Image 1 (tube, rainbow, N blue to C red):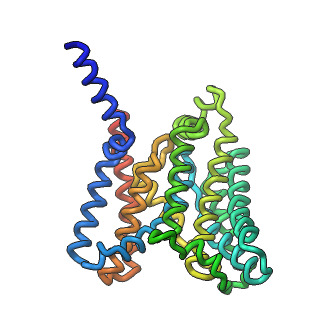
Image 2: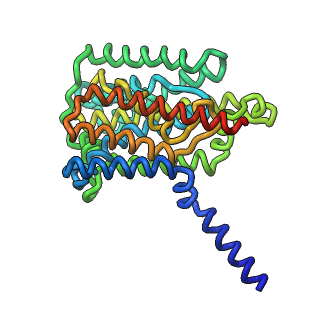
Image 3: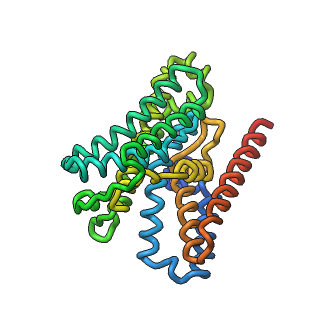
Amino acid sequence: MDTVKASGVRKRGAWLGNPFVAFFRDNLGIIIGLLAICAILTVMSPAFLTQNNIFNVLRQVSMNLYVACGMTMVIILGGIDLSVGSIIALSGVITGGLISFSHFPLGPAVACGLAAGVLIGVINGAIISQTTIPPFIVTLATMNIARGAAYVYTGGQPIRVMSDEFNFIGAGYVGSLPVPIIYLVVIVLVSLLILNKAKMGRHIYAVGGNMTAAKFSGIKTKNVQFFVYVFSGLMAAIAGVVLASRMFSGQPTAGQGAEMDAIAAVVLGGTSMSGGVGKIGGTVIGGLIIGVLSNGLNLLGVNSFWQYIVKGVVILIAVYVDFLKKNASEK
């Protein structure tokens, strides 16, 4: 009898420890919110639940979530990265320019575009980890530097890229599945592995929770900060190359407001702006909510200017909820 009871407890414990169950338990509120929004939009617009529109939403969401995966680590660390939108523009125009003007092969051109994003990430990480200058100031500066470099490189004009190979990166399909969604799955899995399975992930949470305690425990906090900002730069660069491919051109104006969309997805997904708390799964749901809202407003013919208001309200509500949770935990 005792053996049967013990077996039952073990099975129940294994069920509760299932990562999928834990995911739904941790994100139940925003999952219900996402399903409610989808249900309302399905009733209000018959076009919402069609296959073409669903893939369109996922393609749009994927760009934001590339950036948001990096931003999640940055915010867990207790920092912020305002340069990601400008990195999107810079990486896109460099890749497009090298293909169109310099006739680079696709591989080296894409590598140079990604390297530009990594370089901005290296600058951010080096300055933030080696000084006490606030990340907000550092990334604000590199935001302007990267955007300015994109304008200087292009002369303020779009760079048209007429290459089927390049266009496949952001506009191609594998079977019936858009390629950007495949990238998204890979990026989310890599981010999950870093945060949940790797030593670096444990260090990111530790540094974000209490940097002083992390230092005393032997964690090389400077290395952690450096890694996170480089990773964020790489994620933004990937988004830039994919976006340029989708638009068939490198645009110096691309990525404007991308940092706000990424922050909205991260905060809505439950990551604390105070650092030390957050999960990639929540960020994915948060990104889906932002994408579905934007798509729904477009389908309903709502003026696009209202989307800025909606995103601002969403960020404010999410930050306020985080504030209430923090206060409740301290009492």
